[in-house]
Length: 457
Picture (cartoon, rainbow, N blue to C red):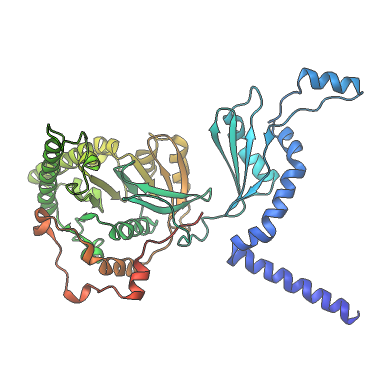
């Protein structure tokens, strides 16, 4: 072979190696350079045949059939009208106009066939308006390596992007829309990482953080510099819940007084309708292991358990209007925990289920939302920590995964934001003791690390 041939072969080998590195290390770059052009051409070239093979076409109209007969041809079936395949950060999206007689369920049932036909990682179907669909094609496994986001998501207070969905969008935790949430996950399932992202996001905002960790505080103690209150035993948790109920009652009185007659009266039924000058600071209560609150070894323990569960249910039923929100976490959750478990679960609108050890926990979390969601949660593999099924009472659900956040990094954020702890006198007796050296003064590098992380799709 001549030198030019060897040079060409070496260049091709080097190009192949570079593309493989890009595909695994920088999948977004690889998608924009290679993936999108190839897949878009494949979709355009095989669209009609693929839709026909998947049963997503309709017979031609009478006018088209008559015209075809006049030309000596047979009118072929008509696929849905489509837009051009537009690129996204994780794939491409097309907007379809369904033909007469078609329904979104027809396309959802054929999503897996479309995925194989176009060699995509996943295909998601979403109705946008009557007669219109959005077909989102995912180019690669976006949950394989979730990284902190790079572009800001618009959102107000108590709005946090926590996990990347398998369709390339972000699961955003909005406390004002979904006030209470249940988070389930076995050991090493990634539940703690989800909770760390949640606490760090809240730590950067003007929010009162309250922790209940009856395992002597081992899980929530690293976040103590940013916590306004921490109960590490069942007795302390019972007392803390009493104080939270008193605070809730006081806030309802404030709403009633502000909404009364007078020139400055404001008609509202929750704290978010109050003027900024008098609006109380929102409170987020994190219960790390809810099963510990239900355990009882004696008759006295049973009375205390029933009292605590009743108080939690009251907060879940009435807390949204008072700006008090619940994050209930646990390794498992079932009706056998005891009296009030099912009633408490019914008040927790948001559901996040990581890998669990038993099917009943997945059903308790997701079966009332969607049986398919519960089935998907039982199929989460052990080698994919952090993957969870996220759902809400509307029936929608999706797989998602939180960016990895170490305990040291999360604790550093809480130390750097310790000066943001709001002053709430009622909780002063429950404020965890923090050594002075554990509170960091924000430096330029720390301030950059604790700034709100932007998010990209």
